[in-house]
Length: 352
Image (cartoon, rainbow, N blue to C red):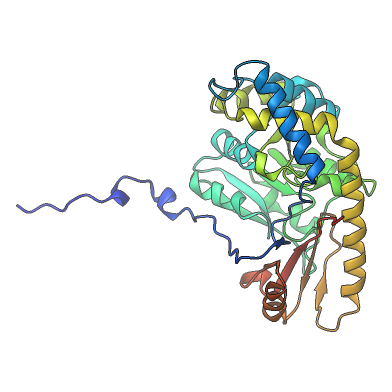
């Protein structure tokens, strides 16, 4: 009897086979305004970072040994930066690893995960990968957070809620007071992704990190990839009460933070606060200036009140705009389908 030869797809879970690969159209262009990154390092900063790495390598073992099993110095620097206790914070390989740890610990078949929509696509992808059900928390027609959506019966019956504030890609945000009210009424775990929060904080808003340290149902995510200009280091943090952090520390794979990332992240957090505040202030000014300009453009149909480091608007001329800017050496992010059709996102790194 003839048997069929096995193929790779025979061995994977259906959810894994259906998991979409993260892709991004990146034509060659020198100015990256499509990934919400920040200012390129100056020549002086490059020399500083190289000097710090050299100093650390000369002091003992470096790349020939495993990095710290628990990078205590980096945890301390991150905790001091956020003014939270060290046992309430765990560093991760970017926010993506933090989200994966949350999925491993909290997502499962039969559970419902409420997710801001539209928002960062990884949230819903991870929900489906772990066999849970996605429950949308739809933003309104202007992509603002809607109390009617957030406190709907469907959302209030979910097990976990993930809220990105300021939201990617819309830039819209919830106040700390609104998040506090939601967390107090929501019966499950609230994950607040504050990847862009430094820009909102500079406008006078309060972070939820301290709130998270006292509530067992609140987890806050932070990253060095945006305001801190360190996307290439892949370092983030999750903040929660000590009992929650201890579970995620056990789930996290050992040696997740590479030695160069550990060294340079600690250096940035301890030595680059003033420079970061300056970059954030420059960025906010540019966002506000470009928003004011866009409000006067006849081709702009909708413009959000972005509280992040980018502008977000809808225009039927998005394709032509993207092509024209590409020809001039600028990359922007254009969306082509669903609620985001004809929308454009442009990052505003502060050029010097």
